[in-house]
Image (cartoon, rainbow over the protein chains, first blue to last red):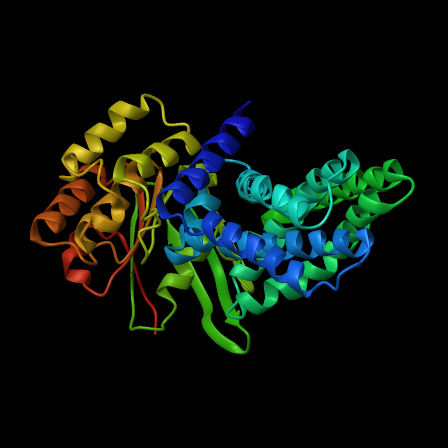
Length: 212
Length: 194
């Protein structure tokens, strides 16, 4: 119960900070809609649905990178992470709360992005939506962990995509497979397994990332 | 309370601390002095559990929830109000009668009227006072204070003096400062880093 209360307090703080500063979500919305507009005009007429599905996943991953790049900025600016690390809560609660907040921002961006995609390219199927939700979980859990690793370094803007994008490849494979493959259940299962495995790894390892 | 033997810390190839020994009994007041770059902050961060020593051993006889750490930075969120910051830390530290304790600290440090203002609107001195409220909120047994008088005006410094006087002997202190005369009268242990 205490763990859940800690996660709740920390996630609420992240949502409140975004509500006040409005740094992340407007940028994500603008970016993802702009990407779809650019893709819409750059994709040759008569291109396949498969190509369009691929573009959706490219847009999601890079939009998520915007949120992940901002995730630890409030903590970095005032070195608040030190105070959170000293607090008696389990340190993984910091990671989980940040992942939940990032998931909320990404989901909010997708509430706009997915209808825009459907308008420009092709209708969105049920398995594709399920794939997006499962991929979001993986993106946010792994990305938040990588973001915490990168934030302690000087080359943080460079390090985050360099570390995150290779780890996101299985998510893209699973997401595209669920969107266009003949057996979406198999790909959704793969995404769920990835989420579970990496969430456990990040949960267990986060403590070692935040203490110098 | 604190026992440190041969503590050292390397940053890459640069040696910041080397062979530091420190004994601070419970209720003691250790004063750490030294020029810029002598490793005062590094030693305090190691004792607070925020950094690992690369050599030697440190035993701080309290769990981390019983430590209050004041850093160079105030460790508060600029886009939250003073009250929201203390509420957050009060929840994380499971402070009993949180609202009463927060209200008392805000009153004592002259921030009650500004409690609903965002920290970004605070002066540097007000932010430092809020940082002191944060440190004292959970009534820690060990207070690790890195340059606690930074940015405080005369009134703020006197408030901190009074707080140190009140807690002296009842809590353990590890304090670094460039102005040792200010807290010299409290010190039971002195460590000069070169």
